[in-house]
Length: 175
Image (tube, rainbow, N blue to C red; front, side, top):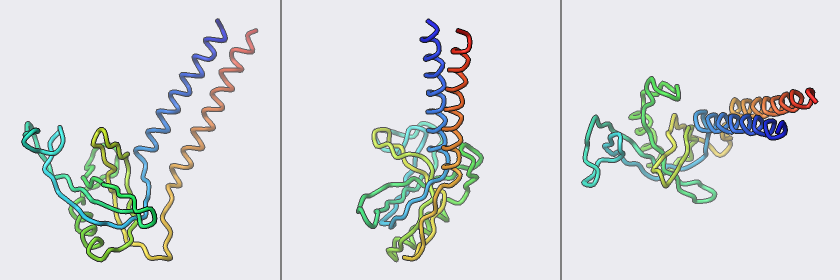
């Protein structure tokens, strides 16, 4: 019975750490080298893009979409470009129209760019990564790395191992 309780606590700690790693992966910025190929603006509400099958039933807003292509793999990716304003995650982004204008200029020049984004692309849920910023790259430039995310991953791994050792020591010391 004690063994089952010990493994239950380890499973709870593992689940907590998986949620925390997922949260860091979603909310913290990532970077990608890409080429902008096009863009689009849609009127959306809380249910998604407004259409005949989804009429507006509440407040609406503009959502910008930026289409990109990876220069080496030719894989396409669609990004959302919306303001985060004062909401979560705290990027305090109020310049989505400016980012859209920059993306248009880079698309006209077929310029290699670095996209800073957060979020996940989930096709089934029509969920898109949200662009935070976009800047031009030259051939000599390297894409930035999410160093702070890497540090948090290492800290979460350490806290997981320390938690497991604490639980094992707690249950093994009472024998």
